[in-house]
Length: 241
Image 1 (cartoon, rainbow, N blue to C red):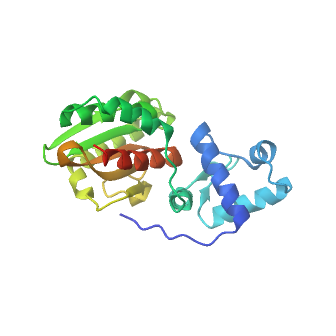
Image 2 (image 1 turned 135 degrees about the vertical axis):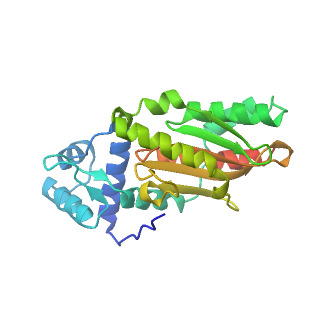
């Protein structure tokens, strides 16, 4: 696991970085200064936006995959973005209330965990992996959605994900934590072949006080804010069962 060290950046650079992360997560295409200038109102000239993007690239928050292309976030850029909203108050996600209504009908722990995995997979773009420790059982849902991500058009990326997921499943119990949500981005991952992927992981208590882990796994280009808030909301919801 690599610890990413963050450098200080200006408020304008933070705003531009956040915009690029959100735009890239949505489009899966490198983001240009021209697109930012046309689509967002930064109240500065295009040259200033280009200079700020160059500064963020120099500080390794952004990278330029091709000479003529726009920028995409690096692991460091994603980490800064995740930390920026993780420090804020977590808001309740409306979808968690729908999940609660569905789960109230399940009394068996296995059926509960299986249905939770299915519901969570429907709400995210990642592969959902739920592990019950005492039962030593793993539920997985979301293969169809995650395989549609453009990253997996690359055969090597697909093979790396399969190997990463195998190690992740086998050693998921080693990710046990006291509380809160942990996010492993790219080179922060604890397992081999994880440099291209992200894992959002939370230690939870299921019905009948069975301990387990809920995780969302997929490419680094993930809807972090939505998924982290959803997991946080679920953790609070599970305390009521």
